[in-house]
Image (cartoon, rainbow over the protein chains, first blue to last red):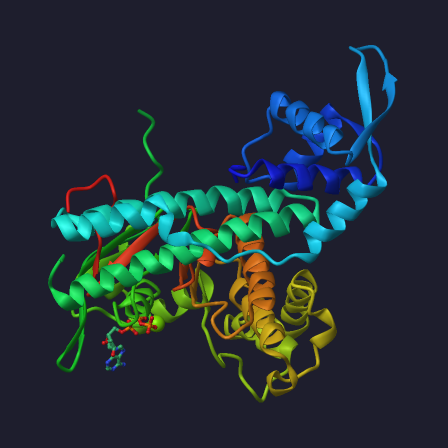
Length: 179
Length: 230
Ligand SMILES: Nc1ncnc2c1ncn2[C@@H]1O[C@H](COP(=O)(O)OP(=O)(O)OP(=O)(O)O)[C@@H](O)[C@H]1O
Ligand SMILES: [Mg+2]
């Protein structure tokens, strides 16, 4: 998962803060644990997002803790942060559009250019299945049901891609054409 | 380079026809001890036929299958039956349990056929039912079991002789996702623990992803891997 829309990361962090006040490091760890298939958050991203949420009045600084390590600012949800989170969770998401996916672009382009699409599809299947194998092992080792559910989502999408790749193979075989 | 261990089972140039239908045309596969391989491919590509040839249930028209270096077609009928009963375990998609027998009797059957004494066979069978978490079904007949329960009993029966290889044809096919996942989990876990190799025929990518590697069948032959020349 890559956050093209910075708003979405903000909402996710509001969701983490709903469990109680936390500092930036906690937020990153909670995020990476909740979304094991996502790219781990960079601290820069966390602090930039917190600054924006604070500016918008959705979170506030509640204390500055110092243990053995560096000084850390603890953030908490404000009342309007809680409202914003509720609003975000109540809103349905727009499905797709998956047609923008690079995999779709490449496959369709290969079909139209008469490139060796069968070979491409064969190699892509191997790559997808290898990714599914790695996620399946990760899923088997995951202790948290939430982690397994997040991995299931990625697995289901890879599975859908694989079925589409296989259908494409069958159609090419039936039509006897790559155009 | 470290040499891979010797294959426990290997098949080369397997051809098999049913009347005019050519099911396999030159299929090949090598299986290493303890390995888990998924056989995938479109419907009608010959997956079940290949599995049956590997397991010695069907003899190919031509081509050779060897188990621990011995050709299956070189064995007598009795020897092949014993091999299937002792060294191989078979899990099929539907109704493979004997309907007149209880779960315990079904699981004990391969041992009894091998001449094990009844109390002994029953004790081993009971252990396997427990291990697959269907111990409470010992006296239940297959018609009174859910699909998932029957599949666990079938897995227990396939494993009761501690086979070297378990062959499974669509082991999750008739089950819903969650029940199928549980059945697959116990099958994979039990074969790993007993260090048995596992050959899984499946059309389900989630199942294929559990295996160490995939063999894709297409029109009765194995498709070259991504690194191989087409
Ligand atoms: N006993 C049989 N008699 C006649 N034809 C058969 C028999 N068994 C298989 N075939 C044919 O051989 C071909 C391969 O069948 P097989 O059952 O091996 O395919 P499969 O890959 O397992 O398909 P599916 O995914 O649908 O189970 C098919 O065309 C099938 O109709
Ligand atoms: Mg089949």
